[in-house]
Amino acid sequence: MILADIFQIFIYCLIILVLTKPLGSYLTKVFNRENTFLDPILCPVEKLIYKLSAANTEEQDWIQYTKSMLLFNFIGIIFLYLILRLQNFLPFNYEHLSPISPDLAFNIAVSFTSNTNWQSYIPETTTSYFTEILGLTVQNFLSAATGIVLAIAFMRAFARESSNTIGNFWGDLVRSVLWILLPLSLVLSIVFVFEGMPQNFNPPVHVQTLEGKTQIIPQGPVASRESIKALGTNGGGFFNANSAHSYENPTPLTNFLQMLAIFLIGAALTNTFGRMVKDQRQGWVLLSAMFILFLGGALITYFQEISGNPLIKSFITGGNMEGKEVRFGIIGSALYSIVTTAASCGAVNSMHDSFLPLGGVMPLINIMLGEIIIGGVGSGLYGMLLFAIMAVFISGLMVGRTPEYLGKKIEAKEIKMTVLAVLILPICVHCFTALSCISSYGVKGPLNIGPHGFAEIIYAISSASANNGSSFAGINANTSFYNLITGLAMLIGRFLIIIPTMATAGSLVRKKIIPSSPGTLPTTNLTFVSLLILVIITVGGLVYFPALSLGPIVEHFLMLKGITF
Image (cartoon, rainbow, N blue to C red; front, side, top):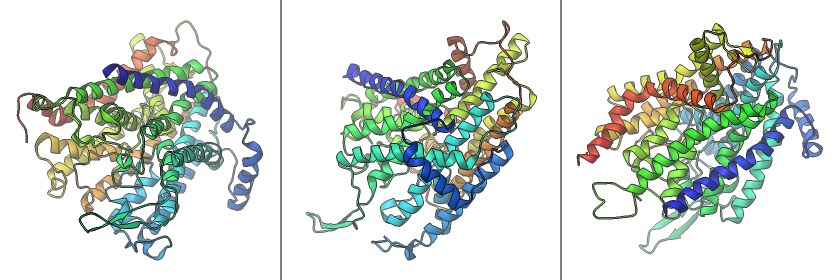
């Protein structure tokens, strides 16, 4: 059984590695405006969009690029907020759902625009089909595209020299949607429909149960939403149970395909980076570091869950099945939990709240590290590049040499902006968690008391701050207090981090590329992979150790002693 489960992890990683290079090559062609097989169909559409929108497609510097991005997403928040508040007047509202309250509408609008897709509400009874399609699904595409184009702009900062521009936000955005997200989503949606996912606009079905009660079975355009939910690392579910629902995830094949889709674009962008800087080894180094961290988390979670709870081990065997779908088993649930948190995708097919302490802490650590282990589409890559810059800088200090990465000197300005970007997430997590723990409104949220209740709070705040969107599922976050602070955390975790990141890109793109010399630190070998992982764990991870010690870690030791809450 264990060998079969490990083999499944191996097959998963192998397929991702096989798909990384061809898709990375395709992405490079798309953003370098080289010929692709979709050009005859999509180029006229692209021109029409530019004509109707009157978009300025000239090259932009980092300030113009970032301003365009912020303006576009601000408008997206306002547009989605209005849809949520006015959904009772809009079509396809078969259940005559009421307008969403101001605090929840703010939270949802920020959530889906920031690619977080945190859901503190029950979709079946809260949002209409119109809201789901024109509001949430549209933002699934646009937020994912935003992450992709920011990564591409950051790549250009390394690939170009003595330049002031890093591309054009509007042009990159259109290409991300038309050439990448729409075609992949269309193909995946068709496969999902064949596997049994609904794709219709029929009203919910009202049936009589054996007990004589009325049960409402929602339907709707599930397959199209599910495809971009996975490909765009969005994670927001059409149903409250998310990918544990038989409509969102009907078979073990759809479960596996969703996991592939979640990693697909993020992994391919590492190869695109290598091609952009004309050294594919650079991309493979980043992907290697990502996969080592991913495999570590997957194996720890799997072996914790397969071992079972020691307090009840004498009564049952087969591992900890609490909160898991029997269709997928422990391996399908454990692997999915690590994939979705490593890729900044909030989708879940099991309840993380029911994992054992050390099994549940790994998804939390993935989130806390920031979007770097594959991460959100695009944001994972530029997050990992920030740590690569720090690794090069630290190694330069160790040998007394001016650090260089890909021929660009890393100087005071770049390292200051990099450190600022890296520190924003832990500051946000710790401050909002502390506020939640001392507030009477905050402590009402967790379902449990003791260290597990604390874990529920810090998981929710971390998930919002890191734009992941998954939940322990043991906290009532649909309150004015949590809707406000998680909404603010999502804004900070998405957009405030982007500003110093893009400032770093703007500084790097103006530098000349210096040829490597015997004193240059090699960044294409296992030594650099090890150094990069060490920097990620020490700089990005240890800052959370005191907080984790109050939650999952102490809970594990208390469990071993037989102490429960």
